[in-house]
Length: 326
Image 1 (cartoon, helix red, strand yellow):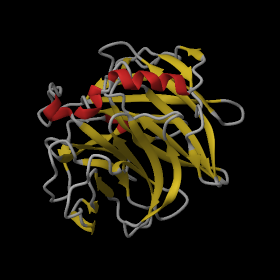
Image 2 (image 1 turned 180 degrees about the vertical axis):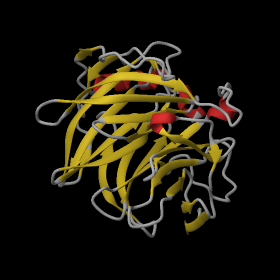
Image 3 (image 1 turned 90 degrees about the horizontal axis):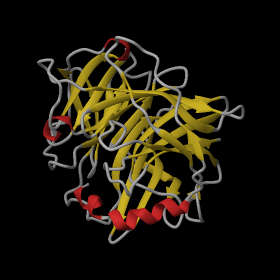
Image 4 (image 1 turned 135 degrees about the horizontal axis):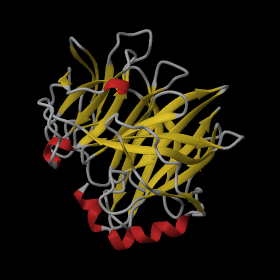
C-alpha cells in the first residue's frame, strides 16, 4: 500500500474518467450520546466513465458516489464495509476508525448518495482509544449471525470481536488463522459463514489463503501460495457472503507500475475455488484502490457495493459503486 502513495500525480488523472456532478452534503447524523460523531462530507455522482469497465452479461451498473472529505477526516482510508439493516452500512478504516451511514437510493433503487455519516474510534482491549497505525490497521469487517462486529487487523495480525453493533464494547480476541502473514499483507477479507453452517467467519489473506473459523478454531480451506504474489499480480482485498447461495463475493486489486490500477469481482466457492470475473474496473474508465465489498438480496437480483480506499491521498478517491447481478 505504501507504493500507492507515490502515485499522486498519476491518480489525479482518474478524476477525469467519470461524471462527477455534485450532489451536496449528506444528511447529518442525528444520534446523541451514543459515542458516534457526525462526519461531514460532500458527495459527487460517479459513473463508470470512459470505456474500461467490463461487466459480465448478468451484471448491471446501479449507480455510484464519491465521498469527499477534508484533511484528517475519518472518511479516508476506508478498507471494508458491510450492510447491517434497513439500508444502513458500517465501514472500517486502516487508521482505526469505524464509520456508519445510510445508503440513499432513488425510486428505481439506484445508489445516489449516502446519509447520516458518523464515526467513532476503535478501542483496545483495555478500553483505551487506538492511537497508532500498528494497532489500528483494520482491513476486514464482518457481522456474525449473532450480530457481533468482527474486525481483522494487519501488522499486528488478529481478529477482534467488538460485540453487537448497537452496543459496542471493548474487544475480545477470537479465532484467527495460524499463518505467518507479512506485516502489510494480512487478512484483507472477512465475512460471515453461510446460515446453514456454524456461527463463524471466513478469512481471506491478501496474498492468498482461505480459512473458515468458529470460536473453537480455524480450518484451512486453501493454503497460501508457496511464492508470494508479484507486484503486478491480483491480490485479494475484500470478501462478503453471497446472500443467494453458499458462496462468497471476492474483490481483488492489481497494480502494475506506473499507473495501471485494476479491480475485479469474482465469486468464491465454499471450497475456495474462484469463479469467472463478474466486474472488472480499469483505465480509462473509473477505477481506484477497491478493498471493500458488501452484498445483499434485492428481489430477484443480488446487489453488491464496492468501496475504494483512497490511502488518505488527495489525488485518490473514496468511491462507492453499486452493481446488480441477475
